[in-house]
Image (cartoon, rainbow, N blue to C red; front, side, top):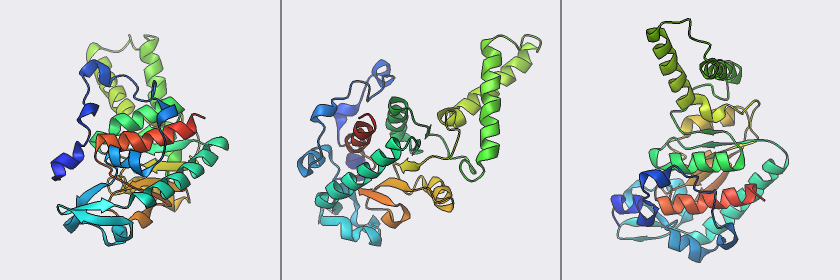
Length: 254
């Protein structure tokens, strides 16, 4: 299987523009969404990267190689997914928020969907340095964003010129893209969930600096030791992402 084929294992995930706006997990069939090696196989969770790109720390989580593609050991994926879900369920029960992070393009839709469906914060644009380690300043910017949005909604900017209002609108749009997902995060999260250990490395680094546990999908090209709760699995294919993140949504909605 080529790298391109790996990324789009499930072509049924391709949606029309209107459908794409609908929350993926709003009408998700959780009752039939069970954890098993067979269901993981069907979702393409087992497909890793080419053997040449396999990280040495992931070798213990690979079963074999097929057509030069590393095949993930799904027996370990099942066990580690269950461990990660148990931890996330505990965090949720404690009342703490879980920060979902997915800065890689194909993960945006899933990360935003699960965060909104489970009432948790999220980051899908570029990670802003200090989001966790300089939370006070970030929170002040979020409050400014909320105030600016409120001013627009109440038409309180009429005293400004058209050009000034346009610049204010552009500023608001930029803030919403970067900080809209963490608007409700008023304190440190109890955990963060990353969809790609390599792409979301900055978020992981800040969480580790503050002692915040990290759960992450670990494909064969990353070091699973960078997170506290690795879930060995394909972090590119839409079907795999939906499968794994769907299980997270299921335990958080109980």
